[in-house]
Length: 614
Image (cartoon, rainbow, N blue to C red; front, side, top):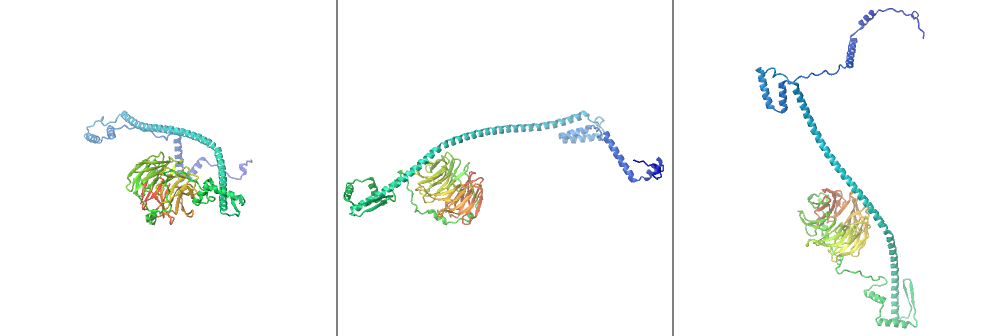
């Protein structure tokens, strides 16, 4: 760095005194400079005060309270307003008369004020203490409740664990038990197949032998008639050729002697019986008739006319078609769900069956109870009147079907034979037979007179959920959890037709009065209308996703009611496919039935009530 001498920078410098510099500044000072100076001074003072702690609040000097103010405050706090008025009147009067001395107009001693403050603080503390005590009591109660709930849930958890372990042990035991059946079932299946083969072979041998005997009889008859031409005989796979020889007369003579002397073998006896009955033994062998009970009833012929067909002409009302029905009456029938309902065929009476193991008879429309039936040891699944209305059939979870006589007021018959719970029952129009469906995958036809099972209908592969006789016919309709419906001949126990189409378990199926249409519903709310003659579905309605539990045809056959699991009843017009919804139940609807005149609809639900819609 090079420092230049003052003489070399070519500038001229003048000496200025300190006094001259201050005077120049005073000359240049203006208003703005003064304002800025004041602001800076104020900020400096505030900073100094903050540093020295002078900014704290000054102490408050407590002024003692006057005697009269103390008395007024006391009387006001105690709510003594009249005393306060008297005191103020007398006090001001004495003041005006100057009768109050200095002692009376002085101030209250500080100890009273402190006592009052302490009293107020003590009162506040007592109040807070009471609140805390209440909160403590509530907390203690809550703690006791929580401990009880904890103990309850702990016990419930232990019980569930015990039940789980027990069920696991039972499951293992059952698996082991059923595993032991596999060899036995395999052996029985092999024996059955072997016996079936032997039966077929025996049948073929029998037919062959019968054909041979018939051929021999024809040949002998020809020989007796003097025919000498050889006659070929073919029976099964055997071919016999009878040739006339010198011993022919001897054979004929022996046969003639045997016939004349009355010596008849079993084959000749059978041929003679077949000729008397006009049946060709080689084409249709005679069958041994099954043993009959002396009290067995006879099925009526199927050529009878259904007297209910006259109701088909009656058309449903506009309210019925449009679904504008309203609840006219509600009856609290049971404490548990109503599972089924049945109308008396001749009187204004309805019977309800319930999960509470009871059935009850009610008069309608007034809703008076007439009779109560108790006898089942488990829930009742279905009920049905006999055609005369004097008896009632019920089926339930105890695997029995019971027949109740109203004149005796008791159960007169208990039919046992099902292996599991009975879901449905139906009377034959003659009143001598009852059909029942069960969870054991079968249906049974019972004879009321001989008190025994006449037919067992096997063919479904899962629980049979409903059964119904076609009116004035021996045809049965069953619906099953195997997603099919079947038509049966109750006289022979054979399946006549199977309806395929449902994708889920079928809950119910029923006929219309004409008997040419069947409707069914499943556990996903799908309704199908079937043509009985064609065996095909003519209409499919999806009313899901809630299950459809039961169906009922209007007497006209054009309208149908559906009991749904979503607490609604749906009215379906089968001509147009229009669906209306009736709401009123508080829980799932389990049963619906139309009155014989078709003007009233009855519904029963899991809320234990039956409701009449008109």
